[in-house]
Image (cartoon, rainbow, N blue to C red; front, side):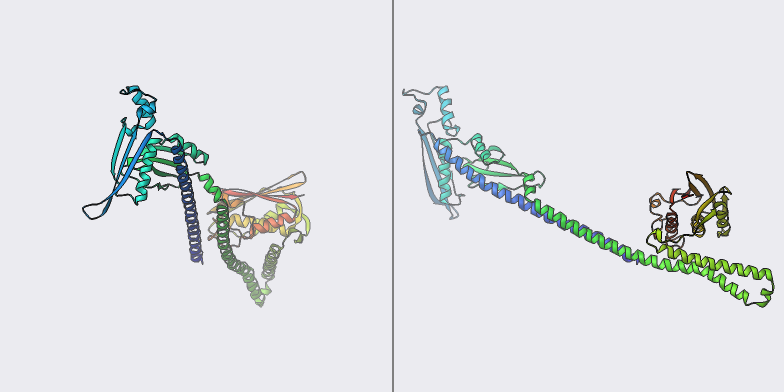
Length: 484
């Protein structure tokens, strides 16, 4: 059974970890999907913003710059169709500067002119480009690239212009202009590489023929993504918690049933052990009573009868103990209140206690001989007997048991201390629970974990209180307070 419980324990842990792993993997996939969804949505918005920005640039174009372009086709050495783009840009610099005189432009005038028509013209009044456009996906893409070249000449692309439009769409990004190694014909997106502080990049060409592109670096607002996933996360947490609780509850139930099974077996074993001693005594006494020669000796007869009465008293006390344990509350326990001399009672308990031959047991009765308490004699006897038996049972080769009592404010405080093994700190608060046995006692001594439960039950029935102080390896001291 123990092996099965351990196996079940391992399986339960593995099942919980596997489930949590699957749940984490699913949530990660859902989070990644939300990030990709945000990227594609933002990409579409940025593409629209770029179109709008190009329209604004077209409106601001310099009218004095004229661009002509042509597209020619050919066949390369491998027999593949090739495209060649020819672009010519020209402008009248004097008109742009408002100069009517036919003279060479000064350096200052050339710098002003360069600011107007962009550096791509290299400060000359005419520029002609002939570019291989064989990589263009279609003729339409090549024509669009020529128009973008014209747009760049007429109205240069600026970071500030695009950034202002992106902010209107609530998109915060880091913009930079770059020159690509080869001609880019369409917008490209590079998705995020980390789910912690994720970023993605969009690279969009704005003058393909000059290999000019804008790089838009966008941060993904993870807080917004998590808010969108809010109900999913809450539902996943609730379901995970519910399933884990069910698994743990199931395991605890199985462990509890296993423990009850062990307790049942221990109860039967202990009950047999407890009943065996008085029954053996009774059998021996009955055998003696059947012997006529022994019955002729009055002293022997008297001793046999005394042992018989003691055995019957022990049986009666044992069954009374079992009966009291089954009561749901202390009010159900019958009490026969009388005046009990504590010194004499403890002396009787100490004398009757079974002392193993392999142990040195020293019992000291420090209770005042005249101290009397109102209590049920048999129950009080059982209380002290349990404490003394436990002190002897859970101790080393030598144990000292000391009893002391004092009277104060109408209450009697009775202390029973020993120098035994002591109780572990983790067990002290549980020792009065029914069927509880401390880790130190399990496997060493037979028992059901009912002795101290029975003691507390009887103390409560008297309207008293019991507490314990213990130090592992040094000993234990029980303090019982009873009303006078």
